[in-house]
Image (cartoon, rainbow, N blue to C red; front, side, top):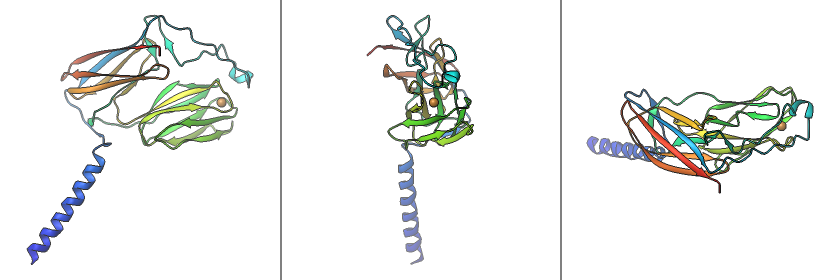
Length: 242
Ligand SMILES: [Cu+2]
């Protein structure tokens, strides 16, 4: 009799445990120490002649906002064809280096700095108002709950949490030209390209991965990459105008 009860308890315990594992497997990322990891270095290029960056019209709060000429950052192509502000990430990594940190998004000169910021999911994003005038944070997303908060001049910092990995657009309803993007990251293998269009992902456990690039005007593209233990893998993306 005792054995029977014990067996039943164990069966129920096992089933409950298996259920939990099944639920979390899709989204869980396990961070820790990586030994013998490799590096992915790459470049995101624009296919074709570099377009001109449009000049943004600053028609409000000019004394604060019209500091120099404002250029659109929605497609910034450098001298060698490299695209700035593209987001590169691994799509299928479940285990690797530690995942932590907090991001800061500043509103300065009525621009979002940086234009694209990586926000670790579940962390607190610090949204600063360095301008001393009213802004408002208005986000557009599919998976995260939308944020629409006024940030008056005396409110130097507000904090928001984003719990689902996706690209979230940020705008200000006070200043129509202000746009920025939050790359809510599922793990630490995300990078934003610099002014030369290059990026790198470090401490990647050796293996085969899918790597994705996202750019706000040009969309997404993926490819396969194999990372050798302790070595480097090179990736080039070429994105064309739609
Ligand atoms: Cu604003």
